[in-house]
Amino acid sequence: ATAEEWRGRRIYQVLTDRFAREDNTAAPCDTSERTYCGGTWKGITSHLDYIQQLGFDAVWISPIVANVEGVTAYGEAYHGYWPKDITKLNENFGTADDLKTLSQALHSRGMYLMVDVVVNHFVVIPSADGSLDFSSSVPFSSSSSFHPRCTISDADYTQNQTAVELCWLGDDNLPLADLNTEDPAIVQTLLDWVKETVEEYSIDGLRIDTVKHVRKDFWPAFAKAAGVYTLGEVLIDDVDYAAPYTQVIDSVLDYPTFFAVTSAFKSNTGNVTAIPDVVTRSQTAYDGGLFISGSFLENHDQPRFQSLTTDQSLVKNAIAWTFVQDGIPILYSGQEQGYEGGADPANREALWPSGYLTDKSLVTHVKALNNARKLAGAANTNFHTTPVQFISQTDSSTLAISKPPLLTLLTNAGETPSSSPEWTIPASAGLFGAGTMLVDVLTCQGTTVDSDGRVSVRASAGAPKVFLPATVLTKDGGLCPD
Ligand code: ABC
Ligand code: CA
Image (cartoon, rainbow, N blue to C red; front, side):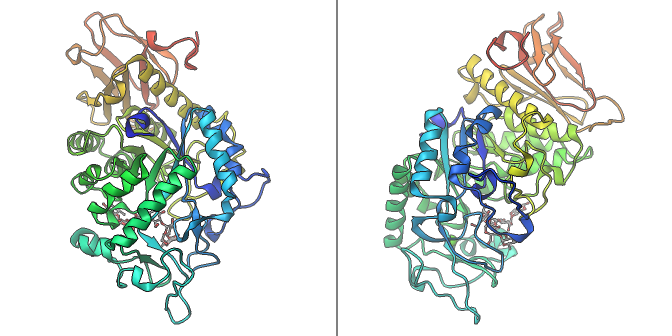
């Protein structure tokens, strides 16, 4: 599927090993052990009802190719980011038929499959003397296929882009051998591989790993060979650094906004105005704006938001942002179940111990937000191409966000605010006519636009508010039935 076809979607991210087991047993999964816990493609296929009930219409799964086997200095390759043989599948996740069945099952529900791909590196376990034997790496089985060994230092990240591209990720315990993506023969092999892989498994989109670690001019041909939507990982808190990558692939994961949103909502002293700042800069800097970027609050590389704060109003405000902004919303599995794991590997909890319960407060929150975004897109055919606008507020703990027909009010005042924050939308914002009935989809409470065309709302216990005009709430829309 194309970027335009993905634009109106909402993605659920799973680590294949951690989302669902086909036998549904209560198998233990100790994240600190960094071992395979038994999640499979069949497991995902049998839990699509759960994902669909949450309101998502696309699933992003872990890299699918065969990884280094056995136990490394950092455990097993359960996450899939240590490729060893790109011509084979990772058998821990299932068979080729299992993956095709997952793809078909998604498509028959009208859902999309996004697969994570890694081309920057290969991994082999170092021998006792530290040497690396590539003879069983496929199809690149000689050390000459890799850049001369050097390790990317912290300083390189800000000062030496050449080292970021040509040196190796990982460390001496487990080096990630950096593929020579300058070699035309290697490039051609990768282009053929991605084309065949996308076709073979009917993949609708790719999440591309370590994009900033490969020269920019490698990517256009790769994206073209893939022939589907490409969403790249450029891990950086810098709009100007990330923006040029939106010209070589479809788009990037919106890391700069992630950093601003996390620090704004992790406490009541966070700076919420950093959000309009980074968003408005990205709207201009990113090729085509933010509409096809990937927006997220959590992923498998970052500490879960609830490891930073468990104040439920802060959590709900931060989650709400993901669903009311320009980019494609992405929710990392486990967030809806209130998981609190810290940095890798603690943030990779198995989902089965949660029981996949759907009567939890954050599950309800996510469902309502997905529904609201869906209804907004149905009510306004330009919804997904209309940039978010921020309406300036006098209270520095608040944000008012307009993306017609959605009006979202966020605050980082917290569950027990010292004073109750208030939002005011002046008539001059021109959003709604006098007397319009608005419904907060998170509480189903109504507010009427006053006779002067203003909206004034006071927060209760620091909760976010996501308003839609009452006329947009169709009977079968799944929100606030009357
Ligand atoms: C393993 C263990 C960890 C252990 C680590 C040393 O080794 O599991 O517990 O701490 C995979 C696995 C990981 C594994 C790694 C290495 O491989 O999932 O568990 O860690 O073996 C992608 C994937 C990620 C994956 C890989 C490798 C790449 O999403 O899951 O990891 O295929 C860099 C890369 C980025 C990569 C990330 C993990 O590392 O660029 O592609 N993610 C700075 C740099 C970033 C750098 C980041 C972390 O540090 O700029 O490039 O990401 O090292 C902001 C700044 C940023 C800064 C951040 C931290 O702060 O603006 O620049 O990022 O303010
Ligand atoms: Ca590289």
